[in-house]
Length: 633
Image (cartoon, rainbow, N blue to C red; front, side, top):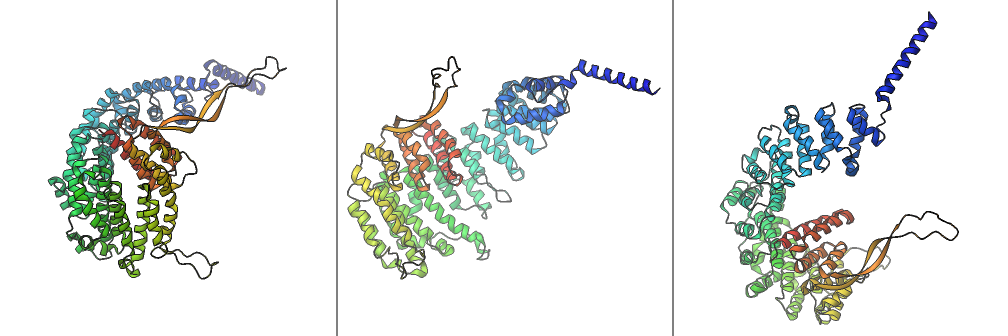
């Protein structure tokens, strides 16, 4: 009996093994591509096959091989439908559209939020306008706002008037109760769609802020700047002049989060990007109005310790500074008779301007507003050729005045800050003859007004002094003045100087400024590193028919002709925050609409290679540069 039982079990085992061999189930190895294809096609071992597919989502070329199998599997249905459509949604392969369409057409799938969202993401990636229309048709039936947001996001890749209308409706219907992320996505969609008819909607919501303080300003401003200059710039100018009734009504209803200074600041920056010269008179009106800026009534009920006081006071200075920046970017040469005396008065910080900013300065308790206004007025005068060398020397001499003696009111600190920026801007804009006049005048002040005390004990640790910065800057900018002596207005000379790897930082800024100002097309040759494939050497004698090695990639340095525009692009990675201002300005002067793609490529290059803190400033500059070049005549 015992032997017969053993024989019976052996027989059953043989039958089971034979069955396994016949079906082939036990032979599927999902560790190989062949086995993975087989698993997806048969529906077997999906618990092991699907994780392998998910691991390929970061390797799109490999994943594409399995797209047809995944589409077929999704259409048949399995317990892994969500994972399958997630994998398909990560690819831009148009063959995946069949699965997305199946999701939209199948009642069960189209009601599964996760599958529907993945289908929408996939449609965005493949750019299928027909399937986008199907998504739009079911948008209104969705209860989950996140599903609505993902459907809207297809408008970030596919242009469609219907999606524009959908995003516009989101921004106009019951905005206070609409989830913030849905509002933000709607602004982003309108930035991509570039529909001029959306300008009024965007202006109504650009300053919307939710209950936790999140604002649409960045996203909606980007959308506004995507529109045609001739459409949006007049609207921005009306807002800058505080003459947009709907916008000012919104400001009146939200005094805790919005002030006229907020409007001035944001619109001035936008108008500068458009280089909208029609805005110059209004900006001069704003700067020239010396009436004391009153503290908003809403602050009166707050305790003096409330941060809102400081925020308002700082914003007053920021709004005026933005206007000065805008005037400099747009240019005021055509308004010399009006601009020169006004900017000169600001530099000298005459009594009317002290009174204008009195409330804000008293609240901040610092000299920041004064210093910023004075040095930016000087920069605008200098870069627009509104003042002579003698004018500059007289301005430098004002730093000897008694008004800078009171340490309790931070006056020596203010003088040091003003002097530091003045010598910097003077160096960047220097001409032949400025070394022995303007720089020499700054150098004279070093022994008295900018003197750094010498410690009694030479071995004692260095104690920081407020004049350290200006004293060092006088030394650091001397090479830039010397470069002006050598090159004066020769773009070729400055281009050659820029190619010197050991160039001083301020000399670099000087060269970039002058090359941009010149408007020259060609900047000669530069040494560039290029990668090149070379054949491997032939086998040595005696090796017979030995197989040649694979071609090798080598890096070598070659000389190439470059445009001045490209030369500045190559230098951009070496620029600090101040340098980026001048690098951007030069690229505006040298570039045109045809250079937009190069700037977008430069932005991507810097995002990978530049320090991320430094890159954030560069990113803002380059994104603004794209707007300026796209609208350049």
